[in-house]
Length: 186
Image (cartoon, rainbow, N blue to C red; front, top):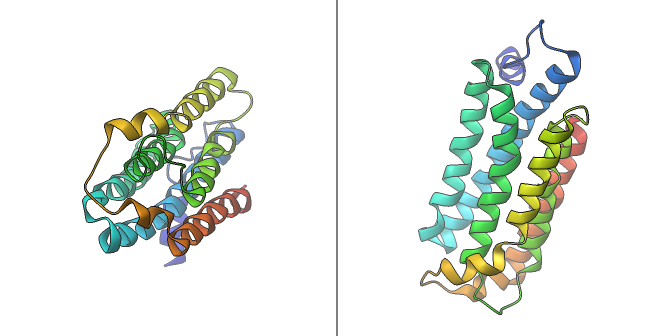
């Protein structure tokens, strides 16, 4: 079982690639596995409280699985970009559905969103400056897009649930967990 997991985590690592790139690819795989678990938590929360939003974390799960397969086929640049951009994009969409224009954002989801902004710094090496800069810029723009997206993405559901203490605490814990997973994976 551990050899299967080790094989999954080594997907896309090749002898001909620079060592730093192999390290980043392996980290991308670990991040995909961790984010798959995070998306699974959001699937459960969505099914319980916001069934119409369940598709958002399911898309995240599919992206995480796709990352592992695409790395095996050699698309390591694309997957690092994808796993750097997709989580913040999906979290922002989820948060935009949970807020109305002019209403304050739930702190827990903002903490979670903020944790996701740092993913490019983990997955893209400083030697890839333009790639890193572009990814960070896109993530930052997505982070600040919640206000304009919330006026476009409206659903009929109890928005107060997004501000409930239990969900707020869960979202904060998941955000801290993502940060911890990212730093422990380095």
